[in-house]
Length: 408
Ligand SMILES: *Cc1c(COP(=O)(O)O)cnc(C)c1O
Image (cartoon, rainbow, N blue to C red; front, top):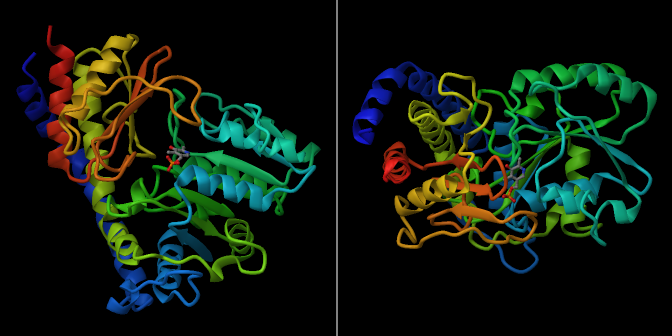
């Protein structure tokens, strides 16, 4: 199979899908521009603080910009969050108290949360503080409405956890429409329960974000979509004002909350990252669609398929063969910009149970809004491909990976 030819055929076929992706990028760019204008962002906001970080005008303005873009009352956008996992951890510890129960309604949460919750025992987990956990699995990649409604009618839960992206599971990601449907059903029965959405990988994929459709609080990583490839670390938490205040007091300390936290020179990068994010997400989506199309033509099972609706920027390829997973991932690394000469191998990673192979030849360590590919070495040997700051670089890396895959 001639990979070059396959890709150019794909691009002809995919034009209408690419146009639709660009329409979303346009709408989200307008939203970002409005957010900057309304908050009168100026060069002075690039300045930052050190030490305690009192009076960090740039940081405070950035949080208003994020709140506007995400349709939430308030937001916390901080470099003191290591990444999305850390922000999810801080949010859960901020909102839950001993004897509370959290209910996960999209099945088992992302790998790094298992020790946080205590699904995998850990002496610092929520479980170790007497916080209980229950879970309802998805059915056919959608919420189990009846079971969820039954559960909340019979018991008082403090917090409901929804994870939109698939993580390292095989299920499809949850579209904003599905999330909206279940939130409105839950709220009609229990209007106090806190609905928390792990929105990693989903920002700017559609024109709506979870807080605009009823979620109380949402969390995402800045080395993914909203960092636009420019933010060097960090995460955001957005939602109701009172909840954001609790999260701020857990991230820093009770009594100081959001008033401290030096931005240490990062403000301009957060603003530029958000500026580029609609386009970076569009490039990533196009690479996902292109990969799905080509890999399916080569006989592999992909999810989502090229013409299926997408809720996130992740493309899953099932190899059913560890060697093929490794080859494909090595191909992505070889077509990346940094460390392209490194032959990536499966290794143990903190927070993950299986060995993971990870191609992330990126400017920012572990960034997955840059072209990247990873997967746990366990059956059915799925690769999770995501990102690309530009379509062209993504296409070059994909071509390299596909060529590795078909070579004898
Ligand atoms: C990536 C991811 C996280 C964790 O984000 P990091 O920034 O990698 O820590 C959490 N949940 C989901 C669904 C993710 O995809």
